[in-house]
Image (tube, rainbow, N blue to C red):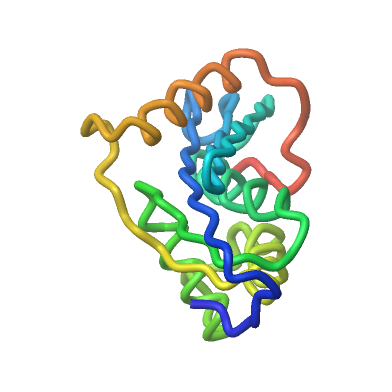
Length: 155
């Protein structure tokens, strides 16, 4: 999907999910699993006030930002928004008809210039192991938020 030329031919698989306890404006969480060969790492975080869409996007961003060098990345997500936004960002088209989440779309564009990303959509809450783990981690992070979502503007 990205036009970046990764230095390594290695492929990283990433699963992501976001959660918001009361949407919009409730506490939210995001989570990701990164797998490279036999190595696996989980990430998660929570904020006090946000939206579900922002947490879905944030999970994707945090996962890619963790990578230390350009990689080929397969992102497994149940979020059509993340996939559509990433495609729109690459085409320089807005992913939404408004300027919502512009801060996150700008960060997505930066990361998509570094990594060669392709997406595999997974059905949420359908028993896919890593997706279910991310869902639980994101909900857990939302229940214990540690910061603020600086880009969130309440409606």
